[in-house]
Image: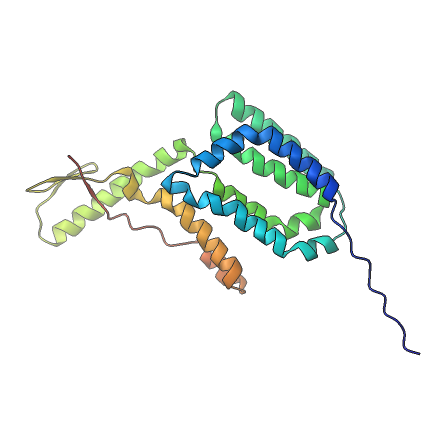
Length: 233
């Protein structure tokens, strides 16, 4: 007599709890998310519209694996949720937009960890990490990075013009040529496009590369060329 193999019952995700936490998150972070979406209209953050869509698609791809996991709530996740709430409070009171926006992602990570446990967090770590790319670089960090890159771009342009036997005099990020003056502006540093390139590289590595070392290599895109200059009036 052939024995009948019994398949283990398929576990179900705690959809009710997830929906409850989702409603609370959206309601609490509605002003922050609205300002974040408006920020995506900038040319430097156009990829922001794709980030939640791609992260949601990866969640959908893994729905069977996630449903097969037995939720084991971890109280450390609740600590992360509290940390996210504290971060939101600091960001709101101090008018620090970056802190308020990143608190949403940290809170979401805490919810997944608290409700699903370690294995659930491990399975969803990559799409959750991608959500950080929908948040723009803080202006204070951007300004501290941009100026040195402007100077670097100016020096490279100066050396290239000198190599071509074109007379040029450089003063900071200003290049004086015999017939015109050129200025290396902030956009020439390429730092803003680096966030988009890194996000696209990570997504490409995930979907099209199965080897781990290639995925890691794809997460480090080549830096944009800093040799562009813009004519100043």
